[in-house]
Length: 186
Image 1 (cartoon, rainbow, N blue to C red):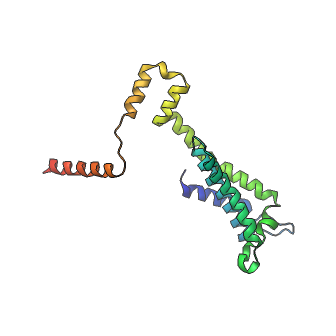
Image 2 (image 1 turned 90 degrees about the horizontal axis):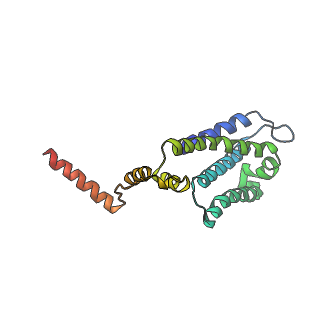
Image 3 (image 1 turned 90 degrees about the vertical axis):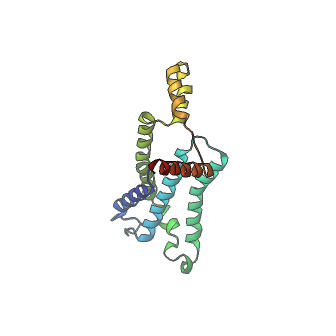
């Protein structure tokens, strides 16, 4: 799903949910510092989970960077909030005092994560079911036992035997194609 759409979803979910919500123990409503910390936490979760969902095969490095990125965000919030208020300004102890103890913060993060990933799941399911890519067709041949169906295998082979070019070769091929078209016109 497009990054702008995801960011817009996260922003409006957080805005509607936190707009007039009493957030602190004294009944104070959410300020921009809490709103920003909550919204950015949601963005970190959504982006990292989208990356995790788009990977077909995980390595230890991918696990480290995806889940470590989420952990690093919370470590950053703790560290930056612990700095002197002259340095951290409005972020001073926001996570420790306001966000972390509030169940609403964690529930909202979970709700925004699920709501933002739902369109991604729907798109992926429709794409895989009705417009499968070649590697998905090959996986179906292996897992669904269609490797005995010669007609289906031939169709997949024909669709996947397109010439592909990358980098320098692609530029040369595109230039020669344009040059050939100019010769045909004159």
